[in-house]
Length: 141
Length: 90
Image (cartoon, rainbow over all chains, first blue to last red; front, side):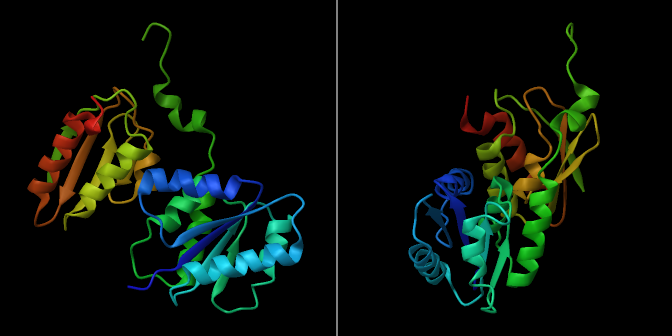
């Protein structure tokens, strides 16, 4: 089965740590890799690094780029790959999104997975207190 | 369809790694497997880790499992055992 690859791209070490955390939860993540772009990195260098990362996880089913923040340098550099058909970019990466890509074990097109990951990322953001309100423990309970 | 109450006995409840264990186990069965919170009625697909995490089930949360399919009994027994063992954490 061909798997959609994932590349997490961020400022600083966020990307590496997200992948490490997802790996601790799900297990082996051979189809996902991280590119952490240093604050003073050269754009050309960063672009080469993303290109290498895409090649590393590409299985022929396309690659999903998850970036930290729309408008930020990691996203802007990642955008340079958008004209290639087998790349999609989703911004605002969070751990549930990485876990979603990691635990994808169905035959899914890049497009379908991208939609699900975007949805998942949004769903995972919630005010926890409002979800748990009905059974908030009382002082004497 | 088989339905059974699940005991959460480990201190951390259904946290990320425990949920991952559950999902790996549930994925091995043909039956559909879902978990339901007794208090809110919130349901989760036991084969999806993000769905399970959304239950936010901790020590003492009332939870039951519902399996439906040709191996429903085996699925429920295996999952019940995993919970009783506290996901290997106790």
